[in-house]
Length: 284
Length: 152
Image (cartoon, rainbow over all chains, first blue to last red; front, side, top):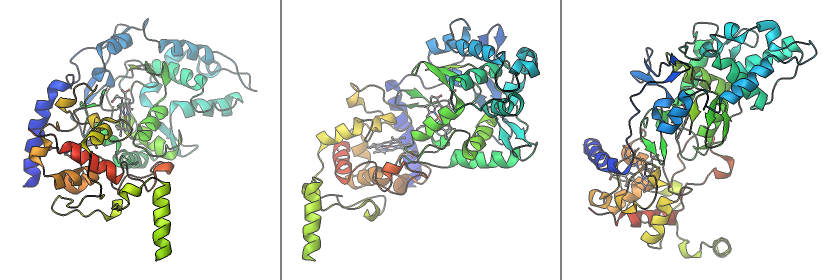
């Protein structure tokens, strides 16, 4: 009984409060980048908590959205250019660059950005673009792996993902043990952490579309990463974002590329199935 | 016995707790019928202190989720949760204390509202915060005193 009264009260109260905050809905708009229309709303895959998956772009302010839509204005394109240079630069004892093996990224990396993380039979774990780069550097180039969030790692990842601009995200969960990592990632997604006792779903599912203080909560999709952020004036990798969100629950942050965050990447990427890769997306 | 008493007193004075020595520990708070009947301290709540805790981003940060019309000079009220205007007309003081101390005891496990005086919290709590509630007992009483002013 108390519950029902509460819910009714909450509904009335929420309505009376709406005048104090900006409109809480995602916008109804199209995103066209370089003459390609992005898929920013897609029917959710089976088993998804939402009916429709939505790009984070729909939740941002008009200027932020306009900056992403214009490749000349998007500061993230600088990282794409830096990444292209690294792609073609010889490094390591084998005297090779990425291009030595993969030639033109526009061809060879066309769908890579839309299909990672993938199953890696060698490590018997899922592998993402950053770790695939490291694997190539160590095994094929005789070079050192990058440190987490080294500018080169972020730029090269941005360049590679950008080759898939517009392609819908689709993971192969049937390969290897991807399904069990997905399950683990799902557990992590709903697990509450920190002194504030939030899970990812507290903000990106239960409160999606609402404002938490000044922040308009999106579905927390991964399809735009690495993203350019105005706040910090630089690129943000996906694991950096994960760590930031977890820190905000007042919990200890897991290490980048730890099993915990790799499982989360598999699950969160799946939650954006069907959305276009938007790398480098622009955020506030 | 004597010695312990003195030790407590000395500790209390050192940490500046003298005025609020009789404090209910977070795991000793009694919830009954969605209420916490007794004050968590023996000093009465102060609504002027309470509103400071309420808006402070590092303390209550209640505006992260709740709108309060009379606080419209503060920027950015969230709308994750119901507006708190008139909260004191909907809830008794004892219920407000229970909601602030540990909202999950009133609204159920699913609520996103943090428990501000609870140690039943999430995993992997930041090391320097282990064993500490978000607010002190006195801060809870102050916030409750502030909420009690929000009549319709």
